[in-house]
Amino acid sequence: MKTYIKLTSAVAAASFLLGVQSYGFVEIARGSLTAGLSARAEYDTNIFGNNTSDADTIFSFTPDLRYTRAVGKISTIAVAGVNIIRFNEADDENSEDPFASVTFNYDAADKGNARLSIGFARSSQADDTVLDRLKSDEYALDSMVNHFYSEKLGYRVGFGTTISESKTNGFNDVDTYTVSLGSVYRYSQKLNAALTYSFRKSGTEDVDTTLFEKPDSDDHRLTASLEGEISPKVTGQIGVGFSIRDYDEGGSDVAPTLSTGLNWAAAEKTTVSFNATQDFETTSAAQSALRFKTSLGVTQAINAKLNLTGSFGYEHATYENSAVAPADNGRTDDSFIFQAGAAYAFTRYVSANAGITYRDNQSDAARADYERTIVSVGVSARY
Image 1 (tube, rainbow, N blue to C red):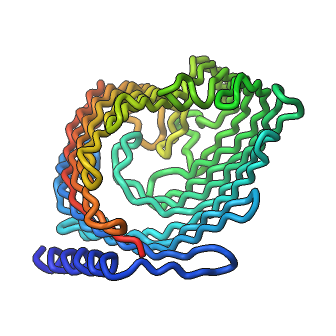
Image 2 (cartoon, one colour):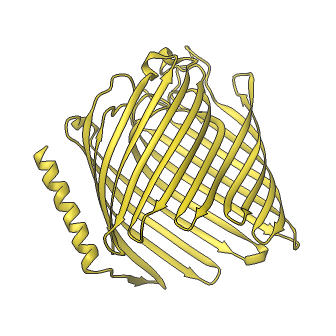
Image 3 (cartoon, helix red, strand yellow):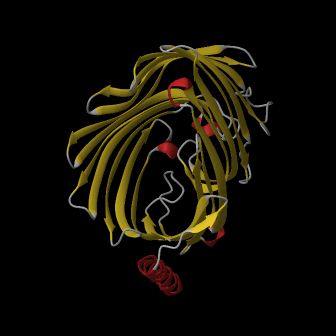
């Protein structure tokens, strides 16, 4: 443990000194290249996210490069790096997780906009849906075009895919493909209304179909939304609708859906955020799940250098049968999540943070009935 502490301390000090001494942009193809360093130490009372409650201290070090470019109507952001994770006791959970992404944005002002994002990330974390630490390679593509053919009316077309390749024995790959088509009405320069239909196909691999039916499905979703400045001090999106999940093996489920995220500038230095989502999911444990999430958070700027944050969240999830985790079949979870944190900017380029997250997961399945607390400190620099 002492070795890890010394290593993390050295990394933190190096990040601090690099940030204090310079902030050197490298100009490449009319864009800017910057380098980032971050170090983090945390104590996790339940590293597997289940009722075994195994605790450990975890250290991570994340170097990255970021390229940004904005020329005319097109902007580009590209990021690549690696998250190096080391456990004090659970050495078999150590990991080096690379990540990379590139996003292109096209802004045609009153005529609309377009976005294309492509990314890869290796994930190593406790997954509350499968109640275990899960390692996977995540590939994602997301695109959207909004075009106004008149002053008030327009349309949108989108396509996205996520491919999750499990690296943990006993769990499944999950692939999803989504296409969407909608109409947009420009209520004002700062507020749009939209009606969008989405079709999503979800599939799993390596499921033992001799035990349970596969959760592969086709989802049909219709959403009505308001997007932009809801009021002079409230911005974001309010989306409500319903979704029909048709299973390939037969049968269907219907549920209301939510996609809401709002920010309220309550005072000069105070921002209140509210989020609420509900949708179907397909898990790596070969389960179909319906998950509702909501949270209320506050960010308070104490001064130009110090910010405090706090939030409270609630989740409700129901899970169908699973060939991977039969003991959890048909389980229902209610989760209560509390988070608090602080961030301090030493300079324009170097900052430190500390936080605590507490989760109380209540379930009718014994393995999913647990508590988890994570306490963390970190430092980061970009130059």
